[in-house]
Image 1 (cartoon, helix red, strand yellow):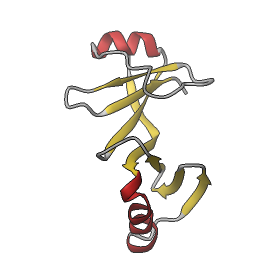
Image 2 (cartoon, one colour):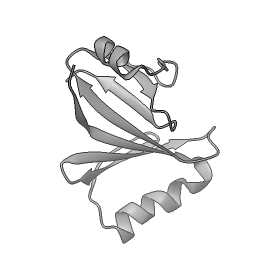
Image 3 (tube, one colour):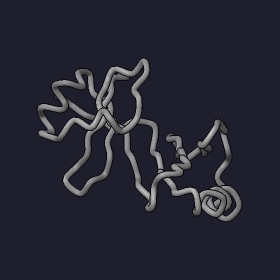
Image 4 (cartoon, helix red, strand yellow):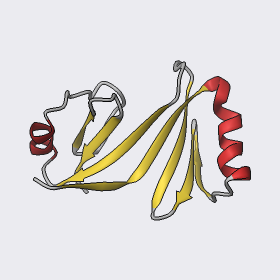
Length: 111
């Protein structure tokens, strides 16, 4: 089973830090906004997309990463990581939420 980096990175930001964080990446870093949806802003980040997501019930910032696998179930077995599919709905996505030993959330999905 081979895993590779996906195209998405998400930073989950508490409500009280939302405006300041969006302004930081847009105005100070100078990243181009590519999409805006309710509670999320996407920025061009090289070949990747950096999503800044507003999470009203969260008290700290988290970074979530995406990994691509031909067989997400086999990848979960290989990683020996816990299934955490309760984190966010995976509507139409063949994959699973999990986390690394440090607690970084990972989306393991096929392309």
